[in-house]
Image (cartoon, rainbow, N blue to C red; front, side):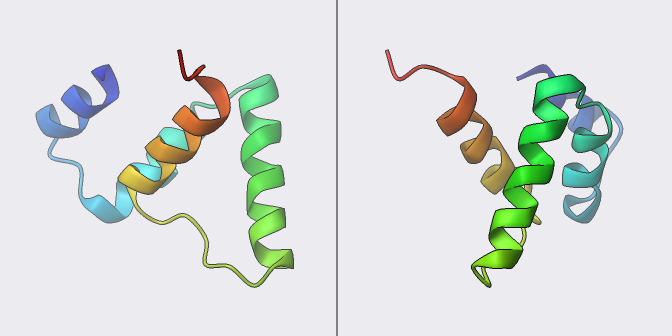
Length: 66
């Protein structure tokens, strides 16, 4: 993914990857992220803090399995 190349190029720390990525979300992606955070709080689940977890959630929700 291009975003991973940017992380490497700019030496982004693991703690900053998720916040930096979600800053660029717009329209439905921003709504999805807000809804996901709200659901996690409601069910007492930990928030997504790591890039691999966010990437998996994005793929699960936005990329067809085929």
